[in-house]
Image (cartoon, rainbow, N blue to C red):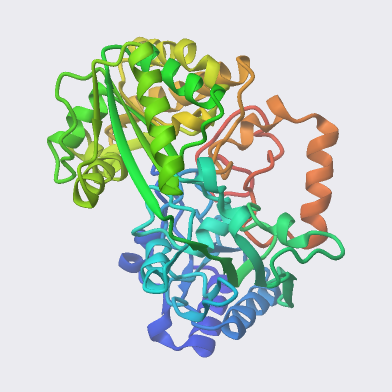
Length: 481
């Protein structure tokens, strides 16, 4: 511990009490990484505020002492965005978990950032409402983290990502000031859209402490279909044809044979066909007549491209089981190896049949175990690479696979990230999709909000000397030797 480290711990204990300031080695190790486990850095302390005002006081203390601070929700992020800076603290927001307002008439809710995504829909479900964005980690991930990453999910194909469902937010800025951004009035627009700037900024511009969410009515009818294919190319072809036909399902997901095998051998067993090379999971919602018509058209498309089986969920329980397998796919991978690297990139839907085999070739060349489960309707790929993080050479091969996969996706006109963010993982690739002027403009925006760069430093934008490669934290500038 340094004198500054001692000072910030003492100040946090004064502000929050010892029970809400963690500083013991056994306590801190839980905060050394998020769900991207090959970047690690142990914080000096963890603060556990319960109110906006307590967050404000913690931030002001960090600014006075020059201590970096990183906000954290549930730690489910997959790009290293919640990993603390060397010598810094974590501001853990999980105790801020109150649903403050449910306004049924205006279809909105006001929540603290530690509210779990799925809990909000459960709470408002009794009013016939729901919160639409549904990341695969929705039973664990928090709404504050969703706002930071602009999270997506299977049902964002039709209903939109987090940005489409957040009306306003209260933030503690990097200097400790409190700002209210956006408008709780749906459709309200005046001045610069600072809400839009904050949303998806990965905790680098401010700490969100209160969120006004837009709620949607539950659909009149929902139908779930599962189509089975003997090739992934045929499965992907069906996806392009569905969208080209002008049909926008509420969800359109793909799983390959390795994912199916992992799911069916786990507690998430869904009853997927054991002999399938690929399955497409489709959900339709809306007016009953519209849903019925779209179902017939989709079934015809599946038949035209050679589906070897088409199954409709018999009832709500059957549909829930099919979705349990999809939502539990990442958890099911835990049976295969101690660690899982979940890549996130986007390609044009038409390129899926070309890109997926090439990703397989990359992993085969590097001797890595690959499984694919992804948001097919958006071309948002999630190659899952199972590995053992205790094997340094294997970790190097995993990182190399990630580099090659990103290069491949960008080469066919894809995007660097779909929903997991840039964080530490992909900052070294930013120069491949943005010009020097673009990056300079982003740096100026960040500097306007975060001039001292104490809030979540070293994330998203390339750091000097590490522009073209992703590095573990201990290799980043300023890290202790």
